[in-house]
Image (cartoon, rainbow, N blue to C red):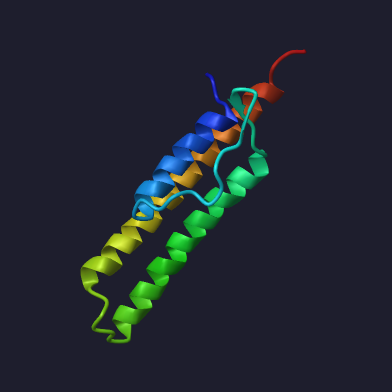
Length: 110
């Protein structure tokens, strides 16, 4: 099983782009000597911030609909809800893969 931070970041970034109406990532990947090197904690924080933003947007739209705002339709609320749900599930799956990889590494004989 080959898991690298770069592949995980690219997968999370593509999911975030799909979930947030094709917005561009906040920070470009820096290329150093032909390979991408970015601190993993920054990548993870950006991904979690994106998921958090989608959840906040979903909650705000649901609240606006409940309060009777005519500018927000039920379809928009449902789409925002599904986007946040998909992003959260993807984040949970990435976390599960990271935990599994960590356990595999810790169980390797030295």
